[in-house]
Length: 58
Image (cartoon, rainbow, N blue to C red):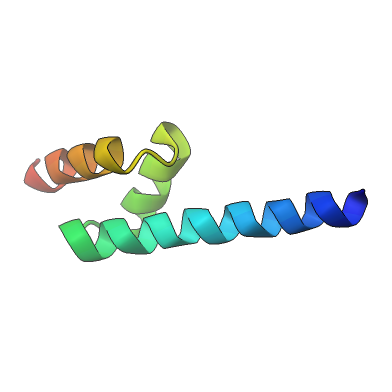
């Protein structure tokens, strides 16, 4: 059971990392900004892109 939870945690972290890298590449925001957006918004790609683009404009 603990191994399953650990594996799920690793997968979630890897997914979060991929979202961060995606935002950096697509919008040019900083890594710190991308991480903060993922923490606040979650994994919704449309919402993340929208907010990252707004952040980049400002």
